[in-house]
Length: 437
Image (cartoon, rainbow, N blue to C red; front, side, top):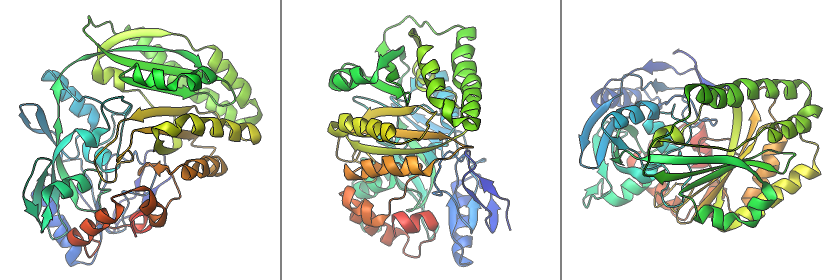
């Protein structure tokens, strides 16, 4: 048996029959062919930042540690090996005077893992990472290495290349093993970040103007209070005015991690104190403004371990959804220490993107890892499901293929592509058996 793999949150683990660490697409191809020949399933993991079992396998597990680095840089695009972390990619891009147009707030994921599970940030005009992909290199179930381009006009296995591209960008690893990703990039730019407290009731009254008036708007609502921390990030001509080293440490490491972790620990031992602790935390929120390179503004440090569920809903339902979540918390005795995060993105054309075909809003619920609260997630999930919500593929949910068929217009098309590319389900696992059947 191979070594045991555990995800970042510690809620998912697997002990595969074999572990390999390929260093090229050719070695991935050999591993896939060997796995199929031995009757085993095969998956490539990322860095374990998914809360679901999407990456797990009991067969051959591929580690991406040796499949890293920038392969090629062109005019407005960069190709990165699949195991390159977003943080490393950001550093390499910045060194070359380049940047991604948008990204999430965590940079520890591999580029392949991030796009395959639909990782996104917040943006009025620019969507998630998959929407910035222009080409994918993949190893198919028979070991063939193919490159699928967004502007491709040919056919692969009898399918239009554009269809395969739109299916594979958020492919859950079900169509093939992604070995390299080509992103659209642009010259480096600065973002001006304005952070400050705002009442949830005021946000609900002005959601449309807040979203329309900012390139990147998100907020964190403290449960059991009416207080939110808002973040408004917009492009700036400069000059750069980054926070001092001390302020960066104070905000990003001490307050948001060390102190917050201590508060979660107290709340875990004394749940009845959580509403008072949240009120105290809300009262200490203060405004701040700084301007820095985009990737430094987009990303945050996350050291306190948590479990997360996130749903995407149609943008026009956001206000109603938040009011219903607030009413749910007021009607129960749940004590929730983690903020609820809210983000937005424009519509996507990747078939299994949670934003496919509609401007979307995201509501993400978290709980402190040592004190899970399944009832909380179930209650919020029921609200999201009534609104046709789509669960993030890498975050906890209970939806199955029957539900997902109803909320993804191209779901049946995706399954048809899978039937062509992987009829024997070489890339399957228990999670995909549930969500794709």
